[in-house]
Length: 278
Image 1: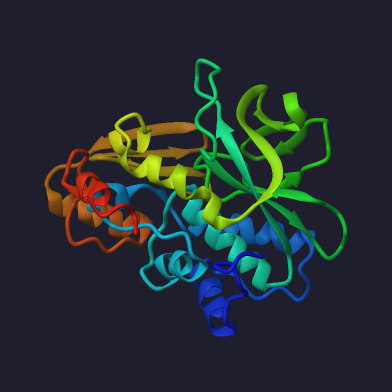
Image 2: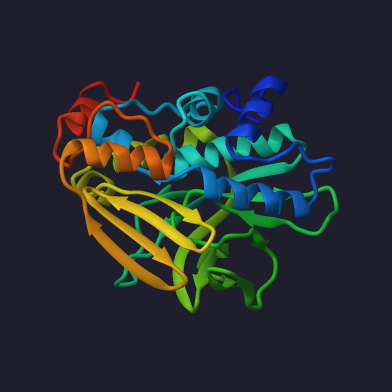
């Protein structure tokens, strides 16, 4: 375990569980893992607003957890899965960080450390499991890492397939999502990937805004000033008006209390580049 990854204080664990509407599991088993992941996806949005608000990102457990628990915010993969790993570890689960490269629509792979995902061991020995609360629209439940057949999930059919050089590909409905390197990693290993996604003009995070979470009947997403609601497979889009309406949507649908509307191209990205993420 690296120096930045220690068990959280009990009071922080309790606050984190309250944030996601969960109770402390009696045993860190597969049922508890499933419940924790699902509640996390419903409660904590996948969002890249910090990129456009000039907010810093430091890959340390306390700061990642504070953003979710104290600030009531969300984040993207390094933040969400980093914080979730800290919670799971503190509850008695065995957690290993994996780095992954995301497949583009044309089949090309992204940069190394493009994504962080989690290998989780449970007390009932049913796994190991692949858990992920930081990939946006993805599986609702953890799935078995060593199973090579199809695994059903409310979000589709997932499969883990052997890839070159000992890597593993995660496929959803037959389409490759990301390629995992299964060597254990530490939080600090992801700093270059996080830096790239916060500052590079080639990163989709610097070129777009997203705030999205799972709902009981679908998903709700605020992309810039467009609110997209998906319920029972039906999608509805609504263009929001002035800043007050946008801020109200962040507050109402995602629980985010922002003091200004993030916009692509605001000084946030340039500011993050200036102080080097430190």
